Image (cartoon, rainbow, N blue to C red; front, side):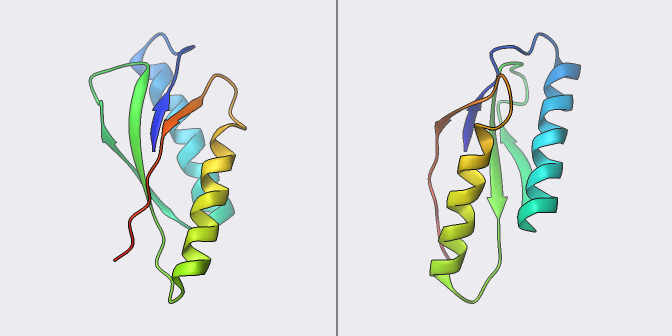
Length: 86
């Protein structure tokens, strides 16, 4: 998921916002989350979310709910998203 953080003015602020996002996703959806790109940019990031299940339909449902949860965070907007299944 590519995420815009327009209200973040420092890397410390970015870390704080990302920690909140990652903690909520891990606790609410039992998924793994990592920052994948734009480490050097304060107001943009790409995070990867991984879930391991035996049903692609259930995995898709969880990832859809994770996407919807991004908008709950104040000052955070989802720019792009894509799903891959292995």
